[in-house]
Amino acid sequence: ALRLPSDNEYVRSLAFCFLLFVKSTVESAPFDLYETFVLEDRHGFNKQLFSVWLSDQGKQAGLWVFLGGPVLAAIIWIIKVSGPNLHLYLSAFSLTMVLVFMGIYPNFIAPLFNEFTPLKDGELKTAIEQLASAHKFPLKKLFV
Image 1 (tube, rainbow, N blue to C red):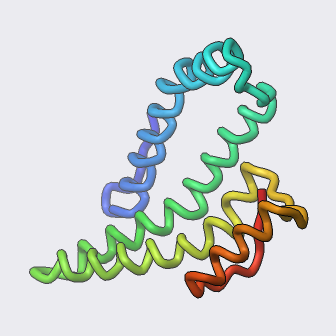
Image 2 (cartoon, rainbow, N blue to C red):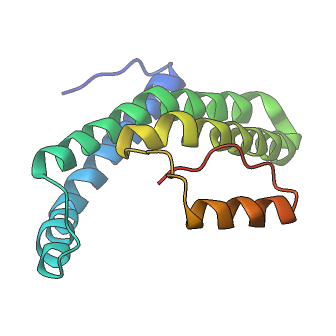
């Protein structure tokens, strides 16, 4: 049996959440496989190979460990030290994480799972640039 130090709340909480993540992934895998490789394939939408699907599962687990683990540890720490103002500190932390991940996701996380290429010059690109300009939106790059 796996024995964790009883006095280390962080290790126990992270281990519990990781095991819950693994359990959830194992339970949902058959349904995800069926959706991707049977239903989507039946209607011509599936362009994914099994090896790519498996790789994506590994990337998700890696992201959970390297990003979700520290965030969870920070939440546990906030709970331990914040006292009666818990809701304020957790709200501020949540807002901070949303803003941080808004910057991290398109630049670092999404490219792990998708390939982005610049939109070629043409009618569509011109129309999008004109729309962005009309609304004073600071458009820098367009990818598909």
